[in-house]
Each structure stands twice: as structure tokens, then as C-alpha cells.
Amino acid sequence: MTAAVQPQRVFDPYEVRQEFPALNQEVNGKPLVYLDNAATSQKPEAVLQAMMHYYRFDNANVHRAAHTLSDRATRSFEQARLKVRSWLNAASPNEIIWTRGTTEAINLVAQSYGRSHLKAGDEIIISGMEHHSNIVPWQLVAQQTGALIKVIPVRENGTLDMDAYRQLLSERTKLVAVVHASNALGTINPVKEIIRLARQAGAVTLIDGAQASAHLRVDVQDLDCDFYALSGHKMFGPTGIGVLYGRESLLSIMPPWQAGGEMIDRVSFDTTTFNDLPFKFEAGTPAISQAIGFGAALDYLSQFNWEDIMAHEHKLLDRARELSQEIPGIRVMGDSENKVALLSFVVEGIHPSDFGTLLDHQGIAVRTGHHCCMPLMDQLAIPGTTRASFAFYNTLEDVEALFRAIQKIQKMFV
Ligand code: 7TS
Image 1 (cartoon, protein in one colour):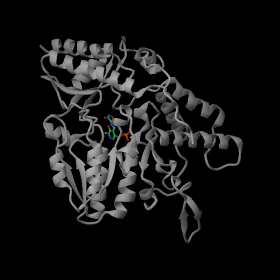
Image 2 (cartoon, protein in one colour):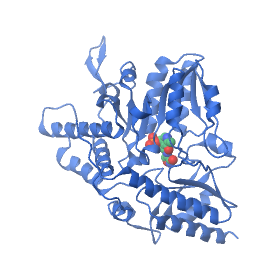
Image 3 (cartoon, protein in one colour):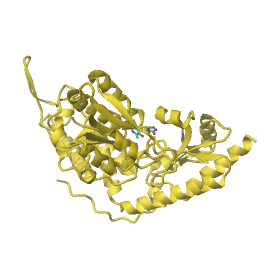
């Protein structure tokens, strides 16, 4: 098993940002201030190099041919899986399934576990702050099985109503699927407690870790979740690769989801037997360079002490909160104490989509709109927000540039 890389490097955001080529450019004549990390993060040179190395020297399909390149490709690809196992502290590499991202990981659970285990009248609990990726797959499986969806309400301050959650739980609850950190509000949900209560009720749990995994150290055994989904591209790795962590005892009883090469053991026209875990859930040629690139991203992150990264991100969030209170006309959505470094806000009198364009003119990249959380926006009674989402390579100067730009735009509208 690959040994985890020990943190050995002092974390310095100014030094780190030099290693992300895309950050060092001008946009619209201004130095780029990249604050759209919740949509996707930038990639360090080490990730780009690892992917290039694979294509330049080792390009071959995995788990197939008896030649040297295929052997090298297979080894790098499987090493990346071991790095994920170690990063998440999963009990075994059999519990690490490659997917295209969080969305595919959730769909896999819905269609494999959900479709084979849920029946009419069973209940699936999600929350009111879910991304569409953790709503729609459950709606499809509910239609297919007759199961019902129940929703944990979101309180005024952007946190989950845990009392309501306790009341929703019953012997009918078969699955609880909740986001770890909200992409629209930043709220970090008390997932450990959510999982504990779900297990007490006999329900299986899935945590949508798309956002949390870029900001928090996640230990799936400590959380005691059954499934955890994440996307490589939000963790400084490439697009097209993600992970479903699944408890082996569940994965082993789940039927295959997609079918084709790689996931089989023996095929005849009469009957087919399936490959062992994790390959049973990986039909077809996988995203080889992306898995290798994601492994390089985890190596990159492993250099640092995560407490230093979290302390830095907290500083960015605190400063952003402070400035948002100093400037009149800004309403921040969600003020949970426990938040990842993300500020979602509305500016009085200016539509979010205009705001995004005007910020872009000043070199500042944010996302505006509903952030794929339409039900949450409906509850907040707004069409959308402007969202500044930070990563560890952002600096206090980036936060200040954002608020200077906001004030400049506000002046244009008076
Ligand atoms: N769940 C959450 C909480 C997310 O934030 C996202 C993507 C997904 C699931 C889906 O991830 P994917 O990699 O499979 O697409 N969120 C965003 C966002 O906030 N802006 O762009 C994508």
C-alpha cells in the first residue's frame, strides 16, 4: 500500500499560487482574481506534469495488455486509487470506485443500491440545501420504486433544522443523503451526527462531499458513512474524475450499474459473472490520465499541514465577512458559524448576473445564479446570488480586491 506523504512544507499562499499557472495571468487588463473555486479549482503544475507524463511515456489502456506501457499505466492508475484510499482513510482500495465526479457517484448509488433496495413507501431523506445532483437522482429512483423523498428544512441562518431531522427519521427511513458543505451557502453540516442518527434508525447514509473535500480533511471511517462522493476537479485535480467511497459490505451486495468491459469476470451469451470490487462498478476504459492527475493533486496537498490551510481559509472568510458588514447594501445568505470559505450575497438593486459581468470586467471571477440549488433559492425567495468561493491559494489581497470592485460597481448604480 502506498504510504501517505508526510506534511513537510510550510504553507505559504503567495508561494503556492506561483505553482498554479492559470492564476498568473491578466483578464480584461487586470490581474486575475479567481474566486470561483466552488465551481472548479485551478490545477498545480504537478498535476499538469503528471498527466503529460502519462500521455508522453506511458499511454496505454489499463488492466489489459501484456506489454510494458500497459503495465506502467496500470500501476500509476492503481497507485492513484491507493492515494485516495489513504487520503479518505477508507478501510480498503476495494471501497474506492472511480467515477466521472460527484454527480456520477450519487447516480451510481441511487441506481445500484437505491433501485435494488428501495420499495414503495420507503423514505429517502435529503436536505433543503442540496445541489440538484443530490436531489434529482433520488427523484428518479423514487419514481422507479415508489419510495418517498422527505426534506430536512433549512433555518433562517442557513443551518439544518436538526430537530426536524430527528422527527423525520423513522423505521420507514431507508436512506439519508446530505451535503457535507453547501455550495450555495458554505454551511458545514453536522454530518457525523446526521450519520449517527440515521444509523440508529437503520438507514444507509450518503454524504455529498463535492465542496467539503476541498476544504476539510475527511475520514470516512471516523464519519462512519456508508457512501461519500467527491469530484477531483474541485480538489485541484482534473475534470472527468471523481470518487465514490462505499462501505465494502454494501458495495459487495450491490448489483452492477453500467455494463461492458472491465466490470465482468466471464461472459457467455447465456450468462455473465462480474468482476470483483472495485472493478464491478467501472465499466469500460476508465479516465486513466485523470485518475493519475488526481493522485498527483493528493500528493500535492499532502505536502502541507491541513490545519495551516484551514487557518488561512478561515482568515479569508473572516475578512470577507467583515468587509461585507462594512459596506452598505450587501446581504450575505447563510451566516452559519461553521462555514467553508465561501460568501454568497446579494447586492441591493443589482441583479446577480449583471454583477458577475461587471466583476469580470475588473478581472474578478465569481459565479452568479442559483448554483444548481433552485429549491434553496425558492426558499430564500431570490433568483440567485453572487458567490465568491475561496481556495487556499487565495490571499487577503484577493478578498480586498473583490470588495473594492463591489464598491466601484455600487457607485455605477447610484
Ligand atoms: N454537489 C455539490 C455540493 C456541488 O457543489 C456540486 C458542483 C456537485 C454536487 C456536482 O459536482 P460535479 O463535479 O459532479 O459536477 N457544484 C458546482 C457549483 O457550485 N458550481 O459549479 C458546480
